[in-house]
Length: 371
Image 1 (cartoon, rainbow, N blue to C red):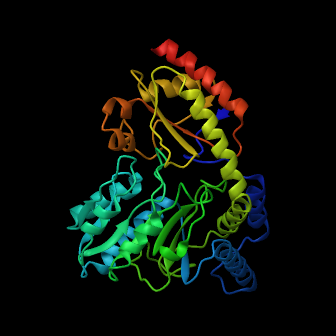
Image 2: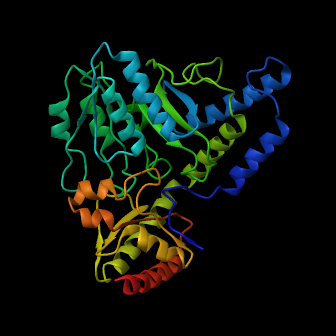
Image 3: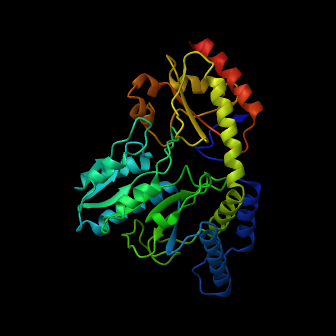
C-alpha cells in the first residue's frame, strides 16, 4: 500500500498506541472519583496536561479536551457567540476554512449573526488590509485557519493577531489542525486554537481547544465535573495521556520532519510538472506536506478510485467536505473544472521517494486510460 492521505488522518505511532493500552489496563477508574484510584488517575491527567503545556510553551492558557478538532471549532464559535452576543454579532472568517468552521458559521447566521468573509490574494493568503478594513467594534470573533487543509496555503497568523488585538472585545481563533506538529506556532498570539491527535500519529477520538484562561465560554456540553468547566463528561484519561505522548514525539522531530518532507515535495512537484494535463494548484506559499493538483478532463473521484486499484490512496478534497468539488481549489482558481478534477496528495516523514516514483508511474497509466 502507498498511503498519500496523511492530511486526512495519520497511522497511530506504536509508542502512542502502547501508552493508550497501558493506561487502559492499569488505570481502570474515573478521574473524577474521590477514592485513591481516582486521585491517581487525576494526577496522571494533570501530568499529561502539564507536559503539553511545557512542550507548546503555553502561558496563561487552558486546555479543553474534546472529541475532535471539529468539536473544538464548534465550541469556540458557538461558545463565543452565545457568551458575548451583547457585544456584537459579527464574525470574520475566510472561504478557505474547514467545513466545521464554514457549516457552523452558516448555522450561526440563522441565529442572527453576521458572517463576513475576508478577501484573499492571488495565492489564497488572507488580505491583511481587507481584514483591517472589515474589523469594527461589532466584531466579536475572527476565525482564520493557519494552514488550509485542501491546498496547504499558510496564513500569517501572527500578523492577523496584531490586527485583532486592536479590538479588545474581539477574539482571535485559529484552526491549527493542518499546521500543528509541522510548523512552529506562537500560542501567545492566539486567544483560541484547535488541534487534533489523529493528525499527528495519535488516536482518533481526542482533540483540544487551547483557550486564553481569562476568556469565558458558553459550553456546548453541560453535565458536571470534568477536566474543564467548559466541557463536561468523564475524562478520557487513556486518550489524554496518549495525546500528550503523540505531541512529545512529533515535536522532538518537527524540524527534521519538515526538511525531509520539503525535499519530497520538491521532488514530487518536479515529476508532476512533466506530465501533460496536470496542473499544480499548491504554490510557493503552501505547506510542503500538502500538494494539490488538477488533472484536466478527469473527475477527481474517478481518478482517486483508479489509483486505489493499485493500492494507492489520495484524497479529492477534505474528508469532511460534502460537496462534489474542492471548495478551496475553486476559491483559488475560480475554475470549476480544476475544482472538480483536483487531487490532494499529502506527505509525511514516513513517505519515501520510491513510493512517489510508483505513484507517478501509476498516475500516468491512469491518466492514459481515463483520458
